[in-house]
Length: 407
Image (tube, rainbow, N blue to C red):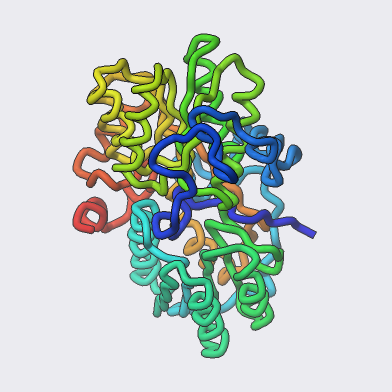
C-alpha cells in the first residue's frame, strides 16, 4: 500500500495566521511548559528528537533533492521525482466540457492566494480548449467541518467528473476523501496529504524535511563555528512546519553552531521584529532560520534599526524578501515550497480523463532561490506585488501578468 504522510505541503499552511502562537512576546528564562526560548535549550521532545522526526522520511526527502525529475525541463509542474505510474485507462472519459470540482482549504495567506490565481488561469486554458466546462469551487475558509460538508455536497451532486481536494487537515479530512473515492469519481489530492491512498494521485513538492534542511545546511556552510542562530517558527503542532524544524534541529545539533532561541511568531511581522530586537539587545545573532517566509523583511529591519550587521538569512521566495535581499546584499537563500504545484492537479485531471498514466505520488521538484539566480527572478517578477511568490510557474499562461498584478 502506498503511504501518504500528513501535512506535506503549504509553505505557510492554510489558516496558520488565524491561530495563536505559543510563546510570549518577551523571551523568558524558563517558562513552564512553553516552547524553548532565548535562554533555554530545546526540550528533549523537540525537533529531531520529537514524534515529528522519522529518519526514513528524512533520508528519503534529502535524497530526492538530488534526483533528476522526469518530465519537461521547462514545465516543472509536470515533472515528477521517482514516480510510480498508475494506469488510468479505466477512468478515461470521452468528450469534453467536463465538470471539475475543487474543494479548497482556504486562500488565507499570500502563498495560497498566489497559487489560487495560477490554478484559475490554468483552468481557463482548458476551458478554452473545450476540456473543462464548469469549474465548481468551494472554499472552506480553514474550517474542517465546512470542508467535509463541501466534499459531501460534491459527492451527493454526482455530476463532478473529477474532484480535486486541498485538505485543511489530515486525520479530520481522511474520511471525507475516502467517501469521495467511493463515489467512483477520480479524486486528486494536493498540497497536504491525508491518511489514505484511495486517491488516483497525491501531488506535493518534496517535503518539509527537505525545506528545513536546505536552510540549516546553508547556515552551517556560511557561518563560522560557534556562530549563533535564531530560529523563527510560526506555530507548533503543524506537521509540515514540525518537519521543517525537525530537519533543521538535527543539522544544527550536528554542527558547530549555537541555536540561541527557538521562537513562535504566528507569522506576525510586528512580533517578529520585536523578538529579534530583544535578542539583539542580549547579544549577537549571526544567522536567522525561518520555517516560512512570512515576516522575513521585519526580521531584517530589526537588524537595521539596531545598527547591527546583517545576519546570514534563510527566507523564502516571496518577492518582499527577495527584494530586501537584493537591496541589502546580505548572504541569504530563498527557500521554496513550489507554488507552481497549483497547476498540477488541473493537468492531472486532464490526463486522467484521457486515460493517461499519472504518478501515484506525484513528487514535484523543490529548489531554492540562490544568489546565482536571484537577479533573474527579480527581473522576471519586477511588476509583481510584494506578497507574490517568485516560483509560481504561471509565466506562460494567457492571463500573465495582469491576473497576478491585479489581485
